[in-house]
Amino acid sequence: MSAFFDTNILVYLFDSSSPEKRHRARDLFRERAARDEVLLSVQVLQELYVTLTRKLARPVRADRAERLVRSFAALPVVAIDAELVLAAVALSRRNQLSLWDALIVVAAKAGGASEVLSEDLQSGQIIAGLRVVNPFATT
Image: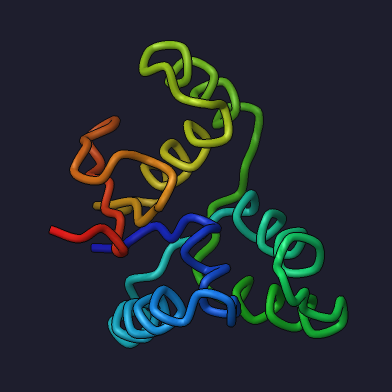
């Protein structure tokens, strides 16, 4: 089954200031992509562009960031519509999540993912039937 990649995991693919996380993110992405197990959402694509161009210690040039986002857009991407936003609002209230984290979870569920790979949510937690995995957590 697919793994939903939160923005923060993708950002590490290009963040030279965190070499260990960069290496782990690259290995994980390659492994999942080779098995066609990568799922993203429109929200992730938007956040990725902004983070790459504005929030990294060494930002990515806008033209390169656009090419990267275009390449990720070729993967399975869940569109965000009003129905998903409303489901995220309900999940946010029910589970005391930020709306943005809840939108990640409902998009992952809508896309048929079995897990959410994220550094922002509590690793091991089950939300809406999806397991949260922080690939950088030490066990």
